[in-house]
Length: 235
Image (cartoon, rainbow, N blue to C red; front, top):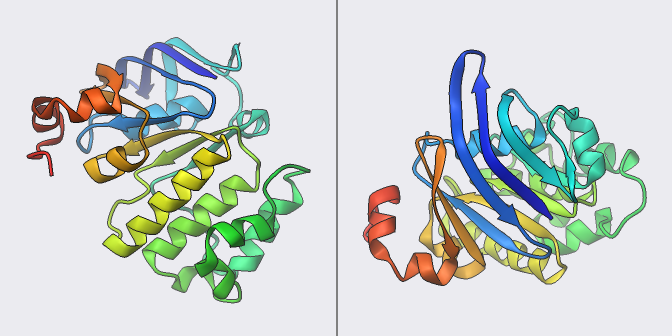
């Protein structure tokens, strides 16, 4: 579905990526793994052409290049992006946030009722302002907003960062539900817990380049990789 080869990208004159390779297949969850600051977010931004300039390499979705394609057109082609900063409209209610997206989304599998079923917390708090939601609820809202564009490929940038364990369980359950619905996902992650629960394959990125490709089982079966690139002991 998506194929990236030797991706280089820069913020102005500062190169952030210099050799990222990865693939995401139909209905597959690929975890993009690495410490903070190594290029995970930059890879996500380069795919959707946001705030960073691709300088070399290829990014193909459904066999067509998306390099140089405006971000809104990339979304229309079927790539959804849930950024790390979540970006809900703070002064609007949950329902209004979803309605704004839904108006321009057209027909598709995901509806407002569908995302409420996926995230019951949002249904219960649909009249609350997004600005007063917890971090976990804001993350759910951000994912729900992206799903209303009916993406075939969903990019999730650090979806569980800073969240309480109970909320992480709910986000993981949602990812697994989306996987059952054959939504392909690229998930930027540092947590072995998420990789164990959701991942089909793992791409490790370090200093702006991919340094490991393998199945989740291969990654988890080699604790030295996690120690080297995540600074964890394998818990």
